[in-house]
Image 1: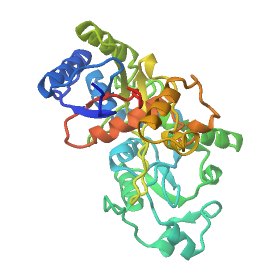
Image 2: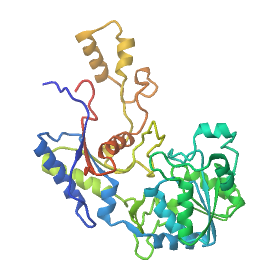
Image 3: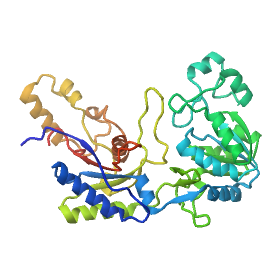
Image 4: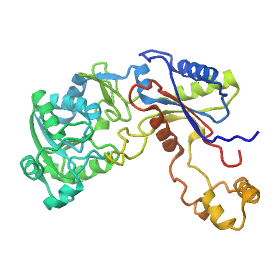
Length: 396
């Protein structure tokens, strides 16, 4: 019988994960219990995705802010530190800032504007236009910022992040000076020791700083990239991808997860005879049309995945075929013609007009974004996602 449903994304409930739990077995049992309860079957090339949060929790990958402070002081000297381009987030960055400030005598906080890297606005583009400010060249002091724009509370959180971050730094015993600029070179007028906190542009920022006279440059990925006094760490990403656990503790991004995804794949094959794909996912990529926020606060969407999820989609655009190649056909004849074209498509459609308009992104980024939207970040209780039919096409 012809299937009438394409891709389905299901949030799978599981027990609350604690440090030391055997996560692979929990994931497999949870998926199989859900299939039995809801009456669906596991198929070849289904995708099982696990959010990075529960993986890090099972690994026990936590660190106190004292460990951040110790590492910052050791690597950046403990004097005046430039902290540049942080994202505006109580969950993601504020807890890290507490540790950073503990490891410095003074913090020169340089905020990008009108928004941070992931779209959180300090001010709007319209406000910049009205004030005659050029964000590409103008450097604003805190006093000038307040004169031009006053207090600016985030429309969703109600937080004035300039005031909030300044208060956190003072609370931890450090002096603070706030400036607003988008050129990383500006911070070198204040200090030669810099912690750049941008995520996806970090390599370029480091390069620019080192080429222009910085003495010490660390990224967030250089802090807690090894244990400090027995803390957790992430060898590749350091503090990137971390978020708040308690008022004094962060949960770091999970460490190597390759064994986990391969183990889940093997257990599913042993128990069902089906070859599924598996990934551990972080933030997806989608923009809020009102708040202008891109997710993407993690350094990558896929922390780890089985080999079958490598690559990009290789799809033809049905409406292009219907409107061009087969514009004179309709009904059953059109269906058969398009189905035959799909079956005969090349293994690589790059440059083919029939593929234009399909999403040119990696499979892991697309599927990870779908999973992130499905699981949410609150109390849904579904840190495991089962995606079925993703690799189907019109002919299946």
